[in-house]
Length: 218
Image (cartoon, rainbow, N blue to C red; front, top):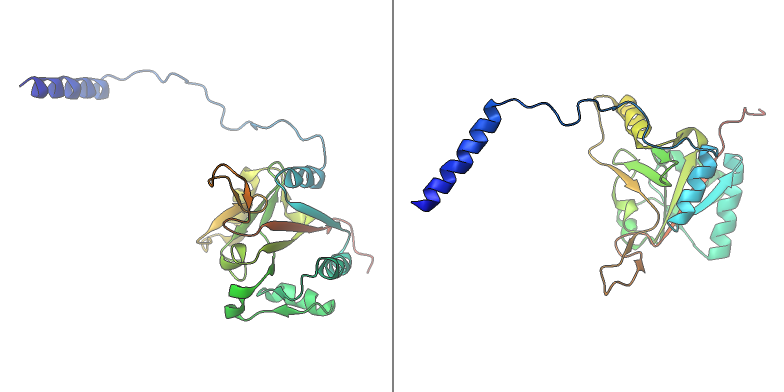
């Protein structure tokens, strides 16, 4: 009987609360103003600084030719070997530089180095936005131990608000089934509170930024 009485008291309070209208505690909420301080550095500099803070590696390239030559140097210096790439737009650049790559779907299981493009670079976070619409979808974000990203200065945005606005405009009614952020290499401290790199994905993460803001000399 006592339990029933307590239950009725609670239900009565709920009903009374629903009937009686109260003024909102915060009637004036500014949802338009920016929550971040104004950036004092160019977006590429801010992105590079934030990426390095989360153990990512940043490589600036003045052109696609410089990207190719830089990638060639990394492959030799770090003994990367054959890259894995399923993106037709990247195949042209890799062939242009004589860089060997593997594109067969099943080869991803043994791939050590993977290279993809991205959707946007979030300057304030040092994060890279990717989606399932980029070849080869989600798998390359997980399997290879080294993930290389080719991005362009025109893909830089200040924060997430602009990235999501732009990706909605880009795909319209054909929105990707997955949109995600990569913030540095994979890591975890769940195992005895020891930081382990590459626990659930790549242990090395490189962003090659090609400056496409300058007019072409051609």
